[in-house]
Amino acid sequence: MPLYEFRCDKCDVFEVWRSMAEFANPAYCPECNEQGKRVFSPLMTLSRSQVPKKVSSEPNLVKIEREPKTPRVQYHSGPRPWMVGH
Image (cartoon, rainbow, N blue to C red; front, side, top):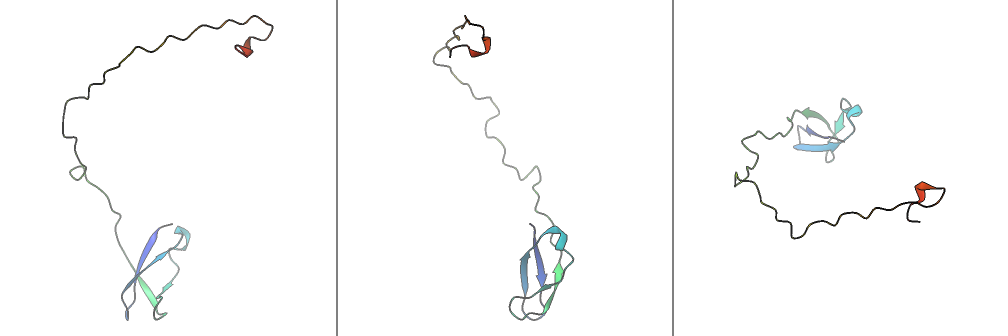
């Protein structure tokens, strides 16, 4: 649910959480109960210049301490091959 901002002539700006289907419904000030006017506030976006950049341009080296074990092969000996190892 988005947060909508409204301005009351007597008090000040107040915010109301409501569904997108209710965006056109009037909102009343929680302090004086006067109908507020909706304030347009743009979405917050980040430009590429605001995104933090990686400090180093070289890739990270990862050292594997030991080789992974090769899986053991299991053979079935019964009439149900899908029950290997049970």
